[in-house]
Image 1 (tube, rainbow, N blue to C red):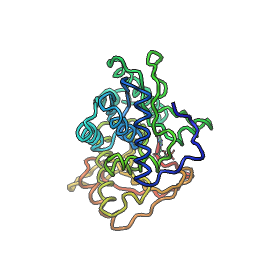
Image 2 (image 1 turned 90 degrees about the vertical axis):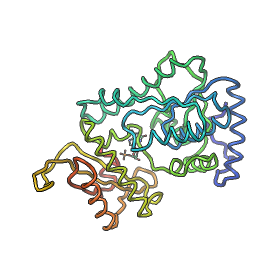
Image 3 (image 1 turned 30 degrees about the vertical axis):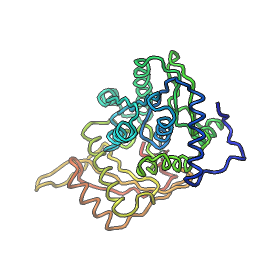
Image 4 (image 1 turned 45 degrees about the vertical axis):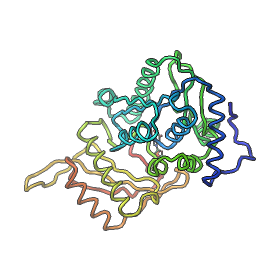
Length: 327
Ligand code: XMP
């Protein structure tokens, strides 16, 4: 088992050769730790869990069982990409759990942001635990813990276990191959493992997903409007050459409506709010001021292509006083 302290002598992983050396070393370490045992992993499709999955597939192949829970709050195309990359390209053992109805039913009518987060977190653990119980003979749980998680948990800022709080009957030995790496190093390793560029360099996405951007009580139609507007935003940012340059960008669809005109008749629809920000430490955040042409394209596309949206607003508020997410 690795220590939780990064040795001062450990060189920063910057190059593909350094990443390859790390991968080779970890493959040996993982094989030594798990032998012929089976390893379970909650694979969200985020950078950290994807890199851990790819590393474990290289080390132990089908002894790894990945569980991808679709809670209905993922971005457009995400579950499909996880399935394509891991089941298709990597030939990994992947269990896909469609828990969309289950999550959305539990969230129906719940408008308090913290209660929504708690429900999403608790439900996720329950769904994952149910899948874990169906599988027999699993001794190990792999996690995409990275070094900042360890530092933050040491400082008491947050608990670092990604699937923390599993029920007591599910006791696993942890496998955490990237726990001494910083985020930029995890990305270099992901590249060296052959993961798609978009998966390795994707922008941060909160655990509760689109749930914190579909403000108030989530409804399926408004959630769909959010998912579609977010997909258009990402597409247009990529076309404008802003992908990978702006730290985080997304849309929010709040739970209020405004009057508009559609096909000569009065309409009463939601606004869509665009948020694009840059930051170094996430403690302080500055807005990315968008080119007028891009804003025009976004207004045109979102109001014409997304049912239920009749207005587009841009949120240029820094943090503080605003947080990045609306909830
Ligand atoms: P805030 O809104 O707190 O967001 O200024 C700062 C950064 O953290 C992300 N975020 C989360 N990430 N689980 C996560 O994994 C969460 O519950 C969560 N809430 C916010 C947010 O997207 C931003 O990058």
